[in-house]
Length: 268
Image (cartoon, rainbow, N blue to C red; front, side, top):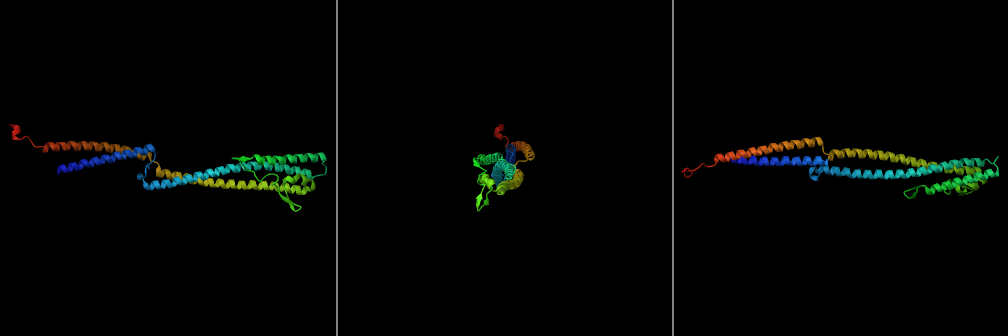
């Protein structure tokens, strides 16, 4: 009976020793990786939840990247439109001056025509040279496309401004005003889209931060807890080893007690 109990205690101590050593390995692994889930067996449900959050985080990063590229493109477009609008406003002033035919000499009118031609050429140059990733972002804003109003049953554009200014100064002014309104409307639309993008990006960033916090709670190791678990497992390991040594010494004493003594032949 004593022998059976001793053997049972021996194996129980060995199992406890293995448990304490495994606990040490787990704690050391978590401390070294910083993660409490290092394989599926650590927490199957937690790993599934973490993977779901990681997929969503990747989606959010791609969406934010897309919005950032769109923001950069719209910024380049709006900057180019701003230059065009400055030219339009300057053009508007020249047209008003030219429309006031009283007091203007022919040479002054010719000088205004040259200035108008220079501004129109500058608009086309800006449209052709304003690029983003190799794309002309101001396409559709050349002088033959801006302003377009109906005159005598047909469309005219800024390209026709010089001749229209001599024939009908009032319509020439309306043509330039129409072009200014076009540019202003396009800038306003871009401004609205940029505000919408900013709002969407802020929402995505908040979701990303919230997901990161949850993911951290699922995956990241608690250093204080793991350090305490490691120390506890080490202490229990040492205590179990001592218990095993004591049990072995007790077992050896029992064996010495039950060992048969020397027989008559041994004494003789």
